[in-house]
Amino acid sequence: MMATTHVFTGLAVVAPVAYVAPDFAVALAVGAILGGLAPDFDLIRTHRRTLHFPVAGLVVAVPAVVLAAVSPLILTLALAAFVVTAWLHAASDSIGGGPEMDPWNDRTERAVYDHVRGRWIRPRRWIRYDGAPEDAVLGVALAIPALVVFDGWLTAVIAGGVTVSLVYALLRRRLVAWTPDWLE
Image (cartoon, rainbow, N blue to C red; front, side, top):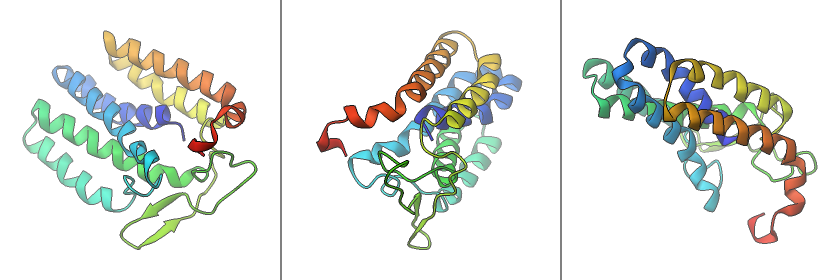
């Protein structure tokens, strides 16, 4: 899935909490945005292995949520939003395709690495590849709760993310031809 879809997933998860506790809305949104993006920083290493923890991430996410519930501070809520969204990002990568640049030509059976079992989880391909039309639809649908709940500069960030998602989805299949060889 697109990084923006992962971000919108996290924002949709924290939106009800932000609605009930608007004083924490910015902290929740920033935590969710950063958590949705963070796992993909492993693009420079082994993508979907180095910073993706689809099983082990839950072991960190649950205590972070408990801590935020027991001690609701800006820092604990932002941390919980970050950790939960990063875990959701890693876990949801298994419902898409593999990490290859052109999954419509060169399909792999590696979606995301499970550090607990020491093996790759196979892709389900419910979303065929990042930027597929169904990815764009899911991303926009997940952005709606965030657009309703958050305001100010966050609305601009979310709307910008929707725009980036739609443009990326329109150009996704062409991007492979435009990608330098050293990035593949």
